[in-house]
Length: 117
Image (cartoon, rainbow, N blue to C red; front, side, top):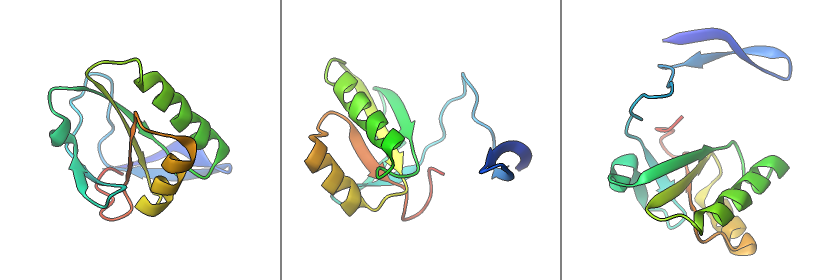
């Protein structure tokens, strides 16, 4: 399913592919790669409240601030998982998490199968 003229990038329209996820939908299962290169699927987190933070790259100012903020908020939450998904390589995510002390959020990469995107 293609959806045209829904969003733009640098002023040019983009075509979105796939079913639109709307509030109230059950999230479809997907598998991403953790920083240790092991797979993580949405089904692995069943029974928890999951906040998905999607971003293109950790090496952009807004994505960096977003990840730091969600990590901070996650420290005070019980039975809630902050799952960050980006297209960065797991090694870049690992470097960033080490440098910024990201310990409460799970950072993952969709680089391999692009199952999330």
